[in-house]
Length: 461
Image (cartoon, rainbow, N blue to C red; front, top):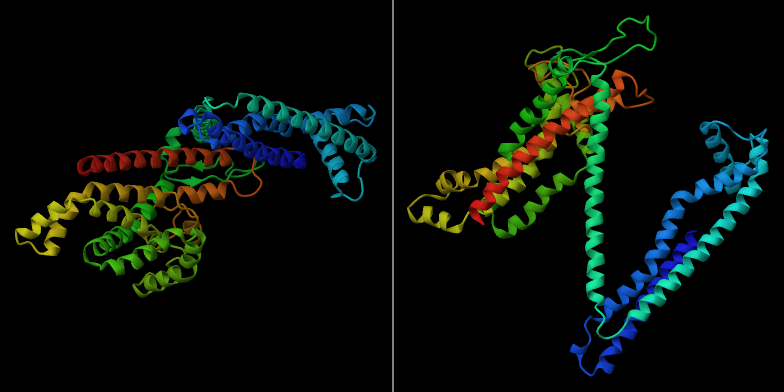
């Protein structure tokens, strides 16, 4: 099938160039360039699309349903006594047949599967030949029809642009439907969770211990799903400690780069600062676990906290704040650069110093954009997982002590869905409820931040 696909694509390229060459000859026959409606490239694209679409559509449909058709044909030839009955047995049987046919499995466990291999190969080969022949026929018919439409006054450009418009609409629908599917999956699984656990307990409970017993007589089989410690840990690390680090450093970096740095210095420093945004979060996790967390613990011990944990909210928050600096700095940079030059010149003309102009004119004028950037950075921070898992721990503590171990919503989702899980237990379903709560929080923050940025843009564009 892959050979058929490659051949069809090569034929499509050939059809494009052939149609383009034929359309290029229209200029000579028409006597003037204005006599031809569309450029030769549009004629070539039209014929290529007319030839490729039906053939690729057939190949795509066969890629989806072909294996099922072959499976039914192979199973119908298996003796009734050896034929698998349940869907699970059918899946195992066909996997063994495919493995034997491809050579991935050397010895058959089921004699009936080994006997079905020749039939599988023959059926697959026959269907591939038939589908390949039909695809090439459709391609040829499409190409002939496309060529028959070519003439100097043919509106090939309009047809191609309509096709491109529908392709763009299709791409947008894929993105929208994917988002809708993700949200609905969260909602449906969360509803199943709340059918077993009270929403009041989940939203306002202060004890999180989702462990449930396998046996009914096991102690603690009910679990505890009060998510307040998780929400607090998320806010404590992502919205408080991280922002205490990121906001002043990011804002001062933006002020220096936009107001004080030489253009040559800015040209090098700004990309270097933005490189922080491209560092994988697991690398930040390593840095937090191996360097910052021990330093924080030693600092806590020097202050008299002898029982300070090796994993702490402060270590995770500090590193997360460093990770967020480029987001705050970039948005503040754009906001400061967008302040009209007339406001800056007016302040300086009235005798204000450069620093007074920054403090009293530029920062207040750019404040909506700066606030919008900070809110987007908070959304980014509360969704971070790796740093928390590696540096803050998984203990759901409701505490104000930054030297203690805490956990966040994202870290608990990872813990709940790691390994083999039963998707009908409250423990596993609670991950979807946490995900839905996190989705709502970040959505509200993003909407508010975008509204602030929009207001800022309307003021200065």
